[in-house]
Image 1 (cartoon, helix red, strand yellow):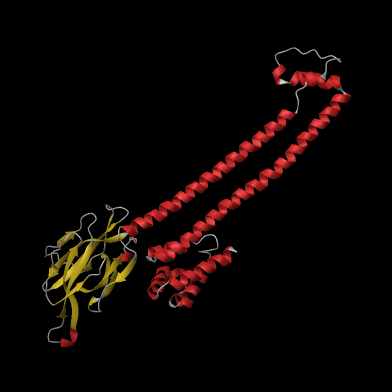
Image 2 (cartoon, helix red, strand yellow):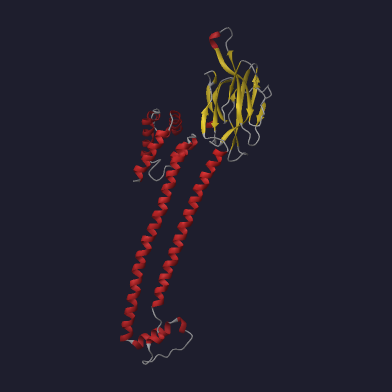
Length: 378
């Protein structure tokens, strides 16, 4: 049943993925999936990709952490949350089955022990009747509570006055069973409470992030500049997670163009853990760079982008290329950054109501040629 249940969950998940989510998911899997399957970013293609993961045993009916991690890395939080809910459901089912298994082991053993104890008592009574003297002497010598007394057993000494009853041993075994059962139930209860607390902490953490208006979804901004040069995507920087947001930049001007830009990213989990992106463009060491950093709890809410055509070959109008000539950032605290580059060319203003700047993508060559910002929409 777990096999069909997981596939049912995956079908629901697949219907919720956008075209962009599929493309990012297929790209993220890389060599784990054959290229011919990965290139099909349709619903049918995504199902084929998941089938490949089943065939390679990267996921199965009881363990699909690989998928959860993948969706979190590409920031498809709805898909990751759906799978985590199902994972927690499986774990709770496992605890219930463990409790039932323990009961099925202990209860039959108890049913076996108690009749044996009663049979032992009846057998002892029969021995008492046939060899009262011998039994009386043996029990009197071995009884711990009479070990300090010298027992002189005689034929006229009644066994029932010296021999301890076997009934207390029944109570001892029953008490041991009850004690063991209580320990087992207590342990299972503790594990269950711990697991529920973990689930609550996870949900509380997600709710905190949503309540802080950090993000509930991503929004792609406009593409500024030309379509030439090498591509970059800061979300692919090592150790970058969906908790990171843009909190600073460094750049320098070269003539009338923005020579390069470099962004830094802080984490919601640890404000002191900052990731610096690679340098996008060409670093002109003869120029002094500009730096602008956000303070704690400060976010970028608007960007001014200056774009102009740049002729790389003199007297060749066909080689006019759109490039980024200047950038300026505006924050939630009312601050504005210096203009990185020069306010030259056509100015574009980008801002979204309730959104904060997440990270940047674009293209660069000798200069910064293209920029596109990804915003976290509350």
